[in-house]
Length: 352
Image 1 (cartoon, rainbow, N blue to C red):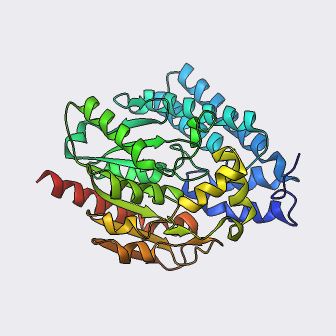
Image 2 (cartoon, rainbow, N blue to C red):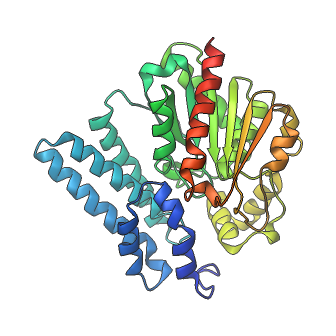
């Protein structure tokens, strides 16, 4: 049954508008997005519409692969992964369908990389899953990309590509309550425990320690900053649209409350999680370079943006991008090269 979020007046048009730049930033074709969303008459039908488009892209990939067009097949599978991921951007009560879409996104990206980047390797345990790409450059350092509350490793392709182009290996991951792990785990405010296992696994895979940077987006920005404060093997961190703190459960909008209740397992657990998302004390412990990026127009009730984090961290830098919205999908050229260069420079400095 529709929840309070879905029963808000005008919610369909608002949700389509609010996710336009985000989905563009995730790599969806803008005309395809308009075509798919223009057919919707009820937001409850969003997952099915996006899954349907994902299946069409998947079928294209299979036809290309059968004909020997490997590049075209891999690109189609990658597009399919994006559509399947974007099917789960809302707190839909059908969690089986959401889990199915997340699995399809995961599998489609595996198929894409098998064709386009056969050296990519999967690294995972019960709490996280991810892919290590650009392994030939891993000696120079690895950037761990951490998604947010309703995101997954299939969303931030542009960021991963920008890092890879700068000679940085990338490990894009789903942690507890995220992506392909959302069906079996719940969100964890003590993300440094997850990050410690990730770093252990990367070092084991690569045959020894390598420089590690972490970049987190939206709630992933909290995870990244918290991990940098508590995991000593992280040498640099970036937050993009990340919260300095959440001011309280009742301050947040219905979308955030319902998504948190689903991703944490219950409203009570969601309330406890919100109370934990607070970097005021942890910021002082971040003893490594930290870049905090916010969109100047990113205003979400109940969320205190990152200016305070940058000011409190000993080596914090702050970039507020004029006109930028949440995740800054509408101004990518104003921050994406900056973040790519910043991480590459910090990792090179760690090697030298």
